[in-house]
Length: 60
Image (cartoon, rainbow, N blue to C red; front, side):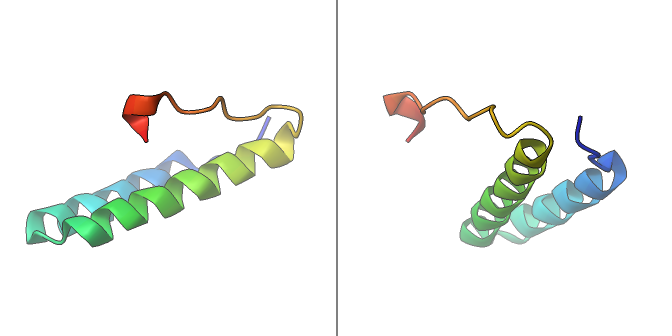
């Protein structure tokens, strides 16, 4: 199992929320995409056989 620091993730989510409150939606979305990719990469290092299921058309 991977070591995910919940406190660090919560701090990064707080940063994204601050960006949203400031009205910079593009940067907030980009930061969420970066956080998601980093989390998935960290999980995949612990279990490389797992892969993310493809997105449904309405999630694209």
